[in-house]
Structures are given as structure tokens and as C-alpha cells.
Image (cartoon, rainbow, N blue to C red; front, side, top):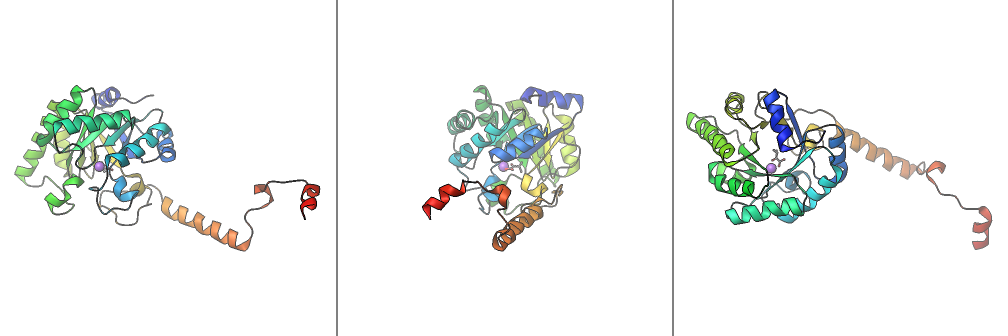
Length: 275
Ligand code: KIV
Ligand code: NA
């Protein structure tokens, strides 16, 4: 069944959990889509897990369009959401609409995601008015790394918790179709989830969110640089890949790969004439 912003919201109304994973290319998007995951996020986390930057700030619109279009070509049923990269929407409402439009037209995303609450309510309203669904992202918003002074849990004090709840309500009112809650205390995420009509998608935000999202390299144990507390390893794919690479290396060096069944034939008399 095709997932849309409508089916995602209906899932919340029925009390059904929503699943989301990141993907950045065609073949991984195809696997995730075939597994029946509801939403695929082309996250700006691609700057870190695909491109090797230390944070997400260097990711460009061109990077996002390039990867989003690859993902979109691999997907049949999942809802494709593309992140708006740093400085593609913060600069003005006009830039926000223009760049959200590029992710839809050139990237073939079906929704965009941006980090922030009340500061970007006008941006969310304008993008939504252009018939582009917006997912908001609250809590630990990695593009604000320099303002936060590091990656840490957000919304712990009463003032911060109240601000996060209000931000969630403001972005819902502005037209957001869902909210990602990253590194938010579980009880606060539960409260936000109960107060909102749109689904909350948690990452490090406890089990009471309407859905969950993970970066696929994290859940497959493919990314060794660090492991956040909220990551569960659902597979040891990194180790399996490394073993396959080593097996390949050994067989090539030993001359056992390629074997006859991997090899193309030609009539012996043709070759003899060339000797
Ligand atoms: O970029 C990303 O992968 C994200 C998720 C962690 C929500 O924004
Ligand atoms: Na992101």
C-alpha cells in the first residue's frame, strides 16, 4: 500500500506505529521499501554517514537533490521525505519555499523536513501553502550544534520542556504533517504525542512516540565512528560486509576467484589463430 501524509496520520488515529528509516541511494531505498517501511528519510545525516563530514553543516542542496532522486527511483510504497540542508531555509521564507520546491521537483521527494519550532512557523506555513508537506524536527536539531555547544539531550528543564511542547503545537498549527523528536526525554515525548493530532516520530525519544526513525548505518552496525545511546543494532551488517571483502581479497590473491562458472568462453580454434 502506498504511504502518504494522509495514511500516516490515519495510522496515528488508529493507534498504529509508523516506521521510518534513512536511505541515501537507489539500492538501499529499494530494500527498505520492499521491507514495508512506511517512510524513508533522505537525511542530511548523509553528510556524516555517506560523505564523512564531522557534522551536517556542509551538506548542500545539490547533495540532497542528488541523493533524494536516487532514493525516489528505488521506492514504490514508502513516503520519501528529504531534509532541507543547513542554510537552505533559515535565510528567508522565500528561500525555504524555493528550496523545498527543488527537493520536490528535482529530487522527487514527497515531503520535506526542516529543523526548528516557532522560529520557522512562517516558513512551514509558506511551504505548506505551496502544497509541499512539511515534517518538523525538534529536540536535538543537529544543524544547531554550534548554538547548543554539542550534541546533547534537549528539553530537560521545565522551561525547555514547555518550550518544546509549545513549539510542537505551533508547528502543527502552521501545517506540519509530522514531527521528528530527537533526543527528547521519553515522558516529554509522550506528552507531546498525546497533545498533537499529527504523528510524532521519535529517535532517542522513547516508545510512546507514534513512530520511530533510525539511521540505517546505525541499526545495521555499519557506522563505527560512534554509537549514540538510542541506537539498537538490528544486524551486524558491517562485520558481514568486511568479512565478504576479506574473502574476496583472499580468493583473488589465491587465484580461486574467478572460477570457470564466472568466466566467458571462446572457441579454442579462434584463439589458436591469434597465437
Ligand atoms: O538526518 C537524519 O538522518 C535525521 C534523522 C536522525 C531524524 O534527521
Ligand atoms: Na537530519
